[in-house]
Length: 133
Length: 75
Image (cartoon, rainbow over all chains, first blue to last red; front, side, top):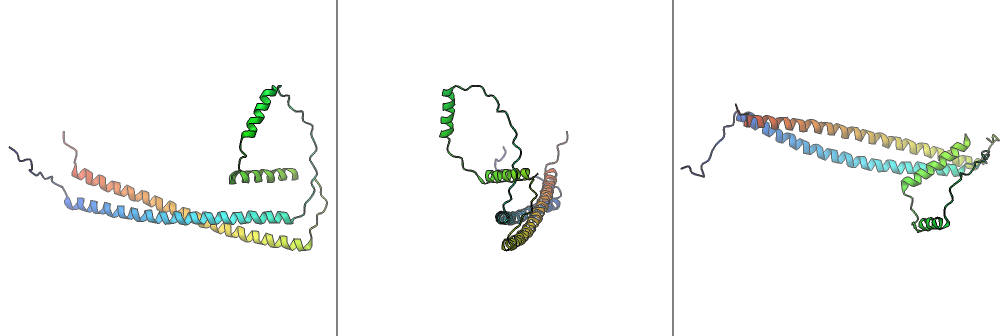
């Protein structure tokens, strides 16, 4: 009967080569971790620089506004008024109309976020540019 | 469009020139920061590609050990 505690051994062909491969893998893994630290520091620096750029661009924007305020107001001719026929809408029952108004009133005033504010500002500038053409 | 000449007060004109000068300085600074960000991005890309090469190398070595220790059984 066999002893259950009997130990078996497996032959490792080319042990030196195997050992070298394992050690090299270990070395590569450590290098990998070192690179991770490097990437982490690069990303931190990049995030800092992006914030710096944002601050500078905000400053430029503020200065452009200042410049705009210093420039004289030039009266622009209003574009020729074109008579546009109002589209004929189907008659809405009075009750439904009031209900819609009530729904509109119930909605809380939406606060504009930074993106929406910039969008609105851009729209305004483009509108002014359109007038100049 | 109204083409009448527009005038600006001399003191305000000086202010405008100053502000313009400041804007130009700020734009130059922003360009410099942008170039630095671009350089950091390139460094990051370089590190990531080195990372990729490194992990491929580790994988190759592990595969080699795996094949050496567990050779395919002969039929």
